[in-house]
Length: 558
Image (cartoon, rainbow, N blue to C red; front, side):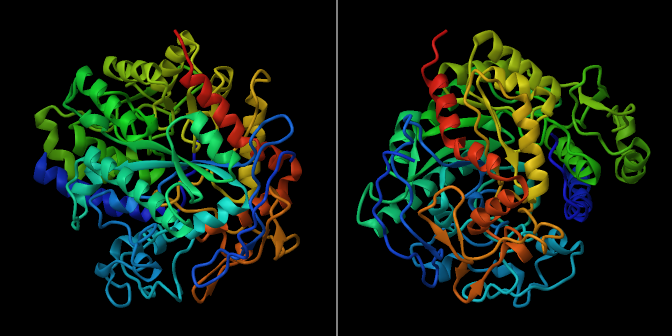
């Protein structure tokens, strides 16, 4: 199912479109064991009591839910100055959860935040941060830290057992945003974010009594992950979601990387601990065409595609049921671009004018892209098919089907769900973007219908925290059956949760939705209110289903 673009993205798209246009002109259970750590409350506490579940179920399976797509360290990406606040700071929470200095004393200088949150570059917000958090974090605030580590800890204590930390950056956005402290090379940013993830592991270890004793464990293979989960800890998988992996951009249709660079890059990433990767993201690159963004947001992405590659998206009317998101209607887009792009006509540049929907990117998987997919198979890595064009996703699935390779996932609703049955028949996995309880439950039902009985079905979410997207809003009309605090975790009867509290601030999912990662357990308890215990049972099997899929990939033999 296509991920829905929230209304807040529209004003941002218009602003960014203007920036990009200017740039283009200028640049052309049993077996359980418990060891209760005591109540987790305090100034940065998670307000949880009870020891997390350890061990396995009677049949030897691990238990716990999975987030297949979140960005703990994206504040280090995009040049390092776009997002405010950090997942942790050795100097303490008062340093980690601070607003960006460039937002000014009252937030009036935060034009990017004001646009995405309020629809206008003009506005204010409280910039105090810790300890009052008057205006942020919030579900609609996209440039403030959404996943401070104690908020993630709250979710782990409630039953989360896998988090795929997607290392992310985007050269185009980095180059266009005026403030930056790091170079815009995407792979340099990926390395930095991986180092920061290991640093967070060390930080949690230090708080927990020494190396290896913390609850936050970066894992490199499914056996290691299983061992970590059986110990009752959180297995953190490193993934990569970036637009130009290994420098594989294209300029005027010419690839800027080689097969040898891809092989060397995959080897380096495996050594770094990366286990899952996207082949393309947001813009066509030398590896594959992308799935278009719809509506006004698509205008910005189309201009970004031109800025980065010298070409606009190219589309035909789809001939197969699977399709990409529709591009903005031709007349609207042409009117918007007529002034800035008229000068390109004499240069022979094709203007972004498209046939009737449904639209399909004419660009699929390139030879270099197929080489990367084969390289990931060879290395037992998980292939992320979200963000691929319908054509590229179909071609990638054909390669995986020919190889009978299970290591494939659609993690955050950016794939046409017509492909879900092919993913499941391979033994792969589908998880859905975080959304209010009714829509999330609907995506679960759709995914379950497409599943294959030969493989364990487990469901999960891709929250996309710190991914410049909104977190789930409060459920509409929830007054009749709100989540009532305190409550017992639906995933672990030994764990009880009250309202999340950090500093002087207390949050309630009924009124604020998922204001930060610590509200994930509350959101999932609300999902149970809407969809009942069956969805919780399927999400409890999410970690096991992922591990079994990953194991099949790691032990694959041609």
